[in-house]
Image (cartoon, rainbow over all chains, first blue to last red):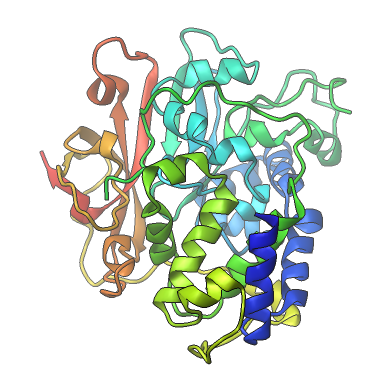
Length: 191
Length: 219
């Protein structure tokens, strides 16, 4: 693929259709600025601030935009909140729809057939492969992103985090916990 | 279309393989594949629905053995050729042989931040009231178009409940094929696992899809 993509980029550049510097800028955006730290800040703020949590529940696109996270594959956001009784998990069975504006580019497993096929029929087995075991009574809700809404899971706030500020809370919020294939870290576990 | 992309409920792909500390890109070509794909999308010659349809039209054996960026590049070749930006010979040889179509715009480095921050909202006003409300029971349609649709096979001809009216959005089944945006109301429809998967399903599971109004019939 290396040679094929290089040949395509060269051809399109010669034709004046694309600008390699624009490609550099796109890559730099997703390597350095748009990634799961954005989402972690959204979740931490929702944990710390009940008014923000309510806003996030009612109008996730606007609440998230207030932190500066907007745009491509985040135009129409919905936040879904885990509770002691319900665990949320997000998939795109039809392609790889993913909330880029808050989580960055999706990991390879999210786009691969194993996850896309099984998340909707056997999410507990999928969760086990991520090392997550839920109580047998926990209700699991899988959100298949079949339209242009993009889902952010707000994991449960871990116990023992009462004294932490938003920055410290954000360190507990993993990418997988915002997809629903993980849980937030317990304090002291985060690096 | 009932293509290889419609994976919900298929079996045999093995375990999910999460990668610890996964990098954003696994190879240099993946970076360029992302950038070339987004740059070509900026031409304004095709929309996201046509892109998705080009990807799902890759023959199943190829689709299922390709990485996602590889799927993107294969589909991009199709789109570039279909819209006259490059010929098959040029794509095969990697040589500029003809003057092709001229795009509405080309993406320059200084435009990238603005373009990505704006994205491509696809909510559109409609001038009819939503047909369904939260709490309504609906049945999804049973159809098998050879064209693009966003109603997955596992969720066809199933009874579910409208959980939310999510707004009105471009209708991909038309938009993918140049038939206009024709916006419709979109609903989150939730199904019990038993309705979808039947005997032996996980009784704690429910699954939702986001469905355009014409995918749904009132019960």
